[in-house]
Length: 159
Figure (cartoon, helix red, strand yellow):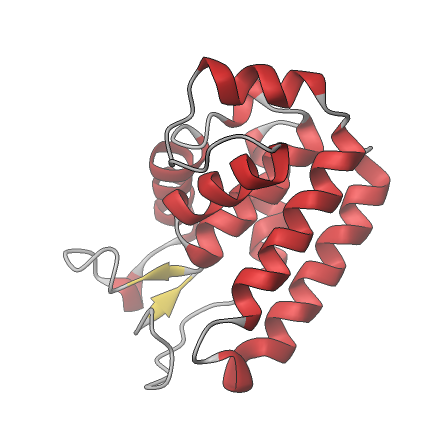
């Protein structure tokens, strides 16, 4: 999967401008949060501006081009929703290696040794467990679960 396809899928989950006081990410637009990007004019962020952020700060940092296509999308979506380090750690846990947040040769070898389908299933199980432990799950959990359910459908198509 290329970045363009993953980005289009991601924006199916991420809406336009939102400023929900209960959202830990604070003000967001295209899923880009003020908390993570305090210097960005979130309200006026364009789709192209968001795309540049996602390509450089997320897609490349999760090593998406080294992953199976379906796993790349799942990890990318998780990173946008919950943070890059969290997504990498949970992918490592899904692969059965030390979840240290560092994607090195051991993580890469484990990813090559496990099927795409198994990685998608294990990663989404890790993601659901992670989300269920968050203090704001009661407020945002239904939306997160629906997002993960949609991603599982993508996973069925991808693997």
